[in-house]
Image (cartoon, rainbow, N blue to C red; front, side, top):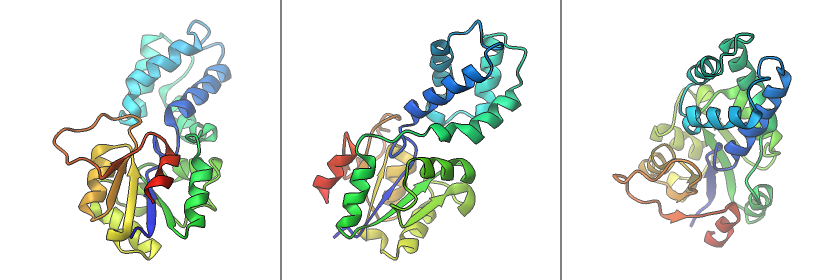
Amino acid sequence: MVQAVLFDLDETLLDRSRSVRLFLQDQHARWPGAWAHVPVETLQARFWELDAFGYVHKSIVYRQLLEEFDVRELSAESLIDEYYSRCNRFAQGFPGLVETLATLRERGLKLGIVTNGLTEMQSLGISVLGLTDLVDAVLISEAEGLRKPDPALFHLAAERLGVPANRCLFVGDHPRNDIDGARQAGMKTVWFPNSVAWIEELKPADHEIQSLPELLHLL
């Protein structure tokens, strides 16, 4: 019997691709002189290629962008600072996000978020998405001193919710960080494939969904 559902944040609750596109549109508009010769669609597309779903450090991404587009008016450092302080102001949720979490809570399930990332940035995204009052625990890697796929972070999440790990269901998009990490901690798993392709050497998740509301049929 599942008593708690835990979620990854980026590309699971937060539609990172839509959010980043909106942020880049804003960043492009904030520096019209610097990017005048670069269409915003070109900037968005090249950022996304270099970013590799968020797994390439932004210092590498922005330095490459400035070099490729020969932008001399801006520094990589200033753009990186903007990214970390402003990007999640544009956070967009996947369809059915709030309704799904609200229904799970109505059914008596404990809810939590377990995410890698910077505390300030991820907390902002959670707030903008309206999730602060919909979950019972939030664990962010920087604040906890642990990173997925370390099973210790998943065990800590279960402890915060007061639920045994084997009574928890974890929903995430990353095969290793989310699904394998949660499995190693003894949790049931749901793969929500929005970014990283499945890693063939890993055991499949217990379930796979194509939308968040599908969870309601599993529980």
